[in-house]
Image (cartoon, rainbow, N blue to C red; front, side, top):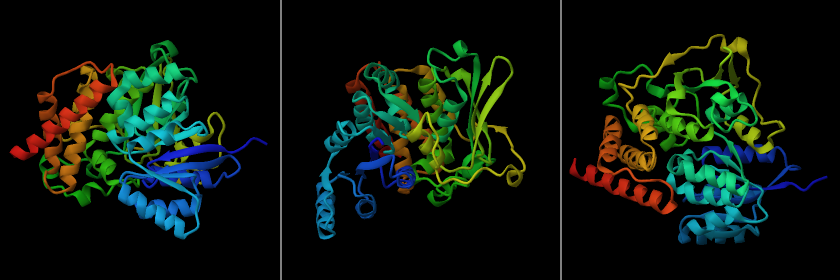
Amino acid sequence: MSQPQAVTVLGATGSIGASTLDVLARHPDRYRVHALTAHRSREALLAQCRTHAPALAVLDREEDAAWLRERLGEAGLATEVRCGPEALVEVSEASEVEVVMAAIVGAAGLLPTLAAVRAGKRVLLANKEALVMSGSLFMDAVDRHGATLLPIDSEHNAIYQCLPVEHRGGLARHGVTQLLLTASGGPFRGWSAEALAGVTPEQACAHPNWSMGRKISVDSATLMNKGLELIEACWLFDARPSQIQVVVHPQSVIHSMAAYADGSVLAQLGNPDMRTPIAYGLSWPERIDAGVEALDLFQIARLDFEPADEAAFPCLRLAREAMEDGGTAPAVLNAANEVAVEAFLDGRLGFAGIGELVARVREACPLEPADALEGILAADARARREAEAWLGRR
């Protein structure tokens, strides 16, 4: 019998990380946890170390790492604790690691995820921002280093399951005419732009179907999350923005679809539980138990679909335009959005201001080639400075 595969979970204390650990724990004969990382959630990481006994744990700050070392020592656990971005890269490219779950939220996930790709790992991509920021460079690295890239976002995972095994080279080559990217519509589906002006962070974080972190919940509420997913889908599936249609589907049962030239539309259905795509990514091309109940179609009873309202939710349009512009435009869009969402959650910016800030930063930042990591990171930094300056002028 083969040895269990060693898995590093980047962003272990977030919702995707916790779901990943739940699936791993169901299959101790197949997987073992090598490393767990968190930003500053040291108490949650301590609890996970006690349960899963990783060889390594990583936190952002040394003060949190020192705290964790002391607590683990008191518990008699041998987990080694490291800190900082260099440690994230180390546990992503470590020779003993076979699978890396990339679940760090935001631009902070780019470098460790890219390190895992360059080390030829099986990379389970739940950090869409890494691909949004560095699409061409990222996909070139996947091909050059022989990494296996499996999308974990439920929508991209669904499309992956609906396409031929070999789907690179353009959609038309495989008889695919369109990708249908489903969206729940978030908590404000059907709201007018006027009604959205008074939205609070608490309202924005109350997603009707999915349990997610605050940043992703806000992105879902503005439809920026769907915009970032559109960009990600373009890179993953060699698609143009015009080949992707966003379909609002409030039940979140159909996770996405692929339309073919013969009139067929293939869809992947399931309960809204991220353990399903996580289990698919871990076991591909096999299937394993994810701990998710089978879908009861009689209980669902109906499936509804409607177009996205880009007038009330301009972030979706801004994301599509950024992908069409190419170069560093998606990286600038992502950076501006991260600053805007943080400002909204801190009470420094209204809900409607998120899209306005992103649009202003896009206008202020020049379009540059995105063929080198240094240029991408420079564009990201400039966009953040422009966003903070715009906030300061308000």
